[in-house]
Image 1 (tube, helix red, strand yellow):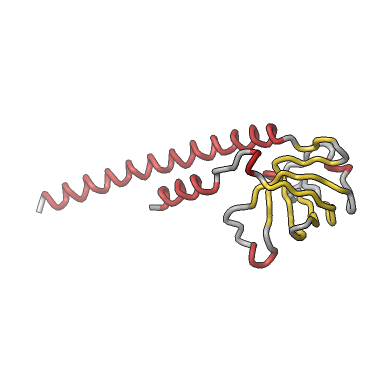
Image 2: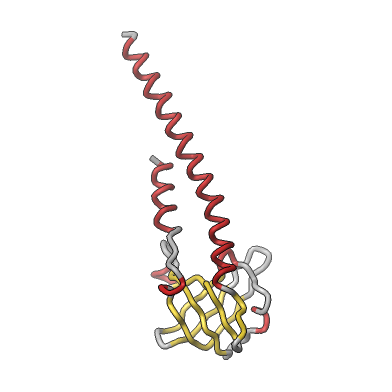
Length: 152
């Protein structure tokens, strides 16, 4: 059951919209936190829709992010974080798919897509392995049950 649940979560969480369906955010940076040593990379950005947290996938620090400072203007294509357990406490959060600062692309959509697809392919391989192992264990248990009940 856990393997099926994991596969279901994988199918829900790892469906990403194409670039044309991402949210376009134009706003002012209020806080910058670059990752490293176990810390995530995120920006607190104020826009027309409010002030929200925008994180890079897997906390990656992209070249050029260090030049972004509070009160700088940025443009972001973002996807809302699905299954965010802290949403009620910290508010909505988003993943950065493309980041433009001073008319320079810092994070390119295609690079993020390649990185995310590569990681998700690996995760899917593990989830499928656990699912296959679970099916084998279920078959062994069922056959064992049949042989025990058949011997009585």
